Image: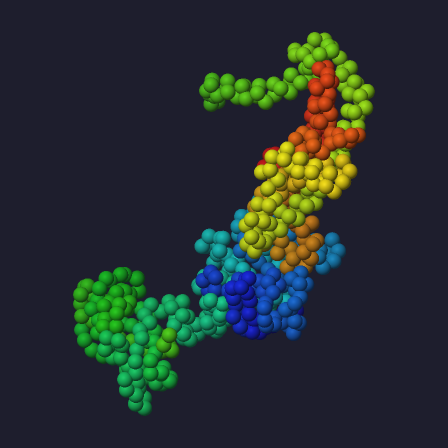
Length: 352
Length: 262
């Protein structure tokens, strides 16, 4: 029942504006893939192309080997869950869930039985005869989920399904969505602008910007090893420091920032380092040590308390840098300090 | 404890009610007056003037014409107006902004100008018979109301509901009837009633387009008043009101008059 999705070299336009550029995306059977990005990055456009509400100007979309590219939306068999629930206001909860089965010509008794069973699974069986207007946001989204799942679609897609819910419910619902998706082993595409949401429930995440996929990988890899400066910024690397290689030997590379601060980087950890590169580090990836030593010389500024550490806004020859220091040694503003990289939490990226 | 309503407000409310209902009471009174001229308060009581309406052939004929015209013009306006309003709302982003204005233009043109230009172009120019010309005129007259009212209803319709139905396997045309239309029903009913009332009461446009043998009830009333001053006018007005109420009642029974309470 579940099938792999393949989007190949798809380009899309709104009028004369190009909104997707040569986009390719493969989703394996039973995998949940998120499209993550700010509004206007093309994630919703991608979803609408797969759903059939938009036609690509080039490229192909296949689902389990079946070419969907020119197939009308109503023949695609894709379960959709919308941001604003999109329940049918004039139909009861049960009729909403049974709607897709009715379109498939399933007899009344059978489709009611199956719709009720699905409502049971999302915990809404007692509300079967209500109209959607009488439900809370969370209940509405459960109905929408049941309505999409009951047709047993080979592909399930979510368009920002939780953004109208409050914070606590969002977390409960995303766990519920993930559990249902895993239990059915349904291939799923999940569109969101919320990084935590995407990372927490996805097998893989495609980070998008300006109609392109910037990186498509597991949440762990994206979080720890961003492939480029855009993704690094997106996943919260506060410091992107342009550097220049000044000397290379067998094991290490010596590099310098604009203001002349030097770092020695191990080739074993960072691999091939181009002559001009960006040294990316989260605040946690640069340790603030009092006094001078091996690292980037800095003067500490504003200190904030994070609970697990102190965070310092430092002035350095390479510009302002945010770095964390231990709780045992609070430093007053204006102290001389050294920022020591923690290699595991830093990356070397191609210069922009 | 009950809230005290200020006296001026009570008086104002009563005044508004008198203003609204007063003319109706006067017409109703005059229609049953047992005199040969229009008078209020009525002197005596008779239903003779209602009987008289049907003895005058011109009234009999124009009542039928007006009903036919209002029904057909309203139906046409809905057949054109519903798809137009749908397209204007569904593809709002893709369509140029002036396009929705086009559908409101007939409201901006004085009705009398509309009637006269139709006379010149359609009745004389294209030599169309009277009834089709009247139908064109009335359809043009009521179409803007239909488009505006249904548009207002569609403006609050979330089109992702339509997409949800399509994604569940319902073809677009079927989705329109099973999902979109039931959710803008109140707008369609409101449009129906507005269009029907506008058509059945119209004088300005019809004035130019009626001709020998074919006339509408309001035009016949006008012609009658020019010659007679008997209570038939009042009784025919009552009849016109009753007809309108009857149509609203039928529409309410079949479709549900929810727009008044929403």
